[in-house]
Image (cartoon, rainbow, N blue to C red; front, side, top):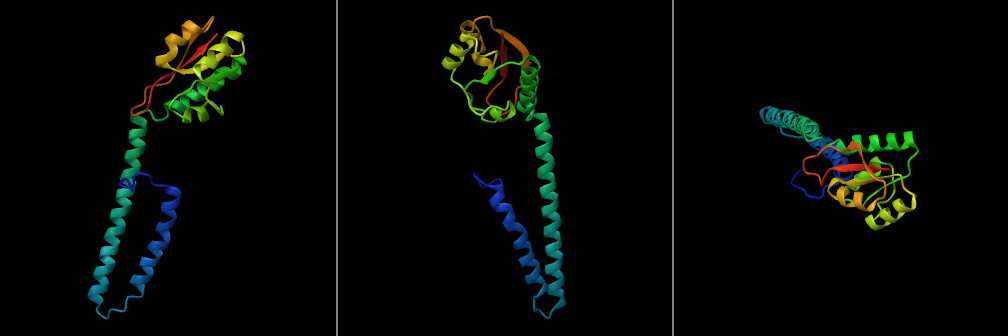
Length: 169
């Protein structure tokens, strides 16, 4: 499965059970009179099944282990913290344009805003907090009046685009 670059799980996995049933029906209806050949086919089938279970289980365990090690849940935790803080303080907040589209889902927003628009809305008093990439925070802090960095910051994730911070009033 890892060889196919743009695989769609919802389109590939539904094909596997019918193919397995078809293979079982073919083995069950084999008309070979020789029981030795039939036993070999069944033995190889059982070995292939065991190998596939072990490889799929090992792959899943590896994905879970590397997910914990690489902090793949960093955006989930950060988004939950941002939502909790915003609810507790009744903040109006937005998310700056980033490459992590999943961030919108985790902070429960439907769109990104451009930095120029965020600056204008902040200075008008229409925003109380902004989620921004850490690398942009210093320049935004100069443009936002009465801005401060919140204690909320996402963890660095291996293979992802960056760290995010919450800028507040």
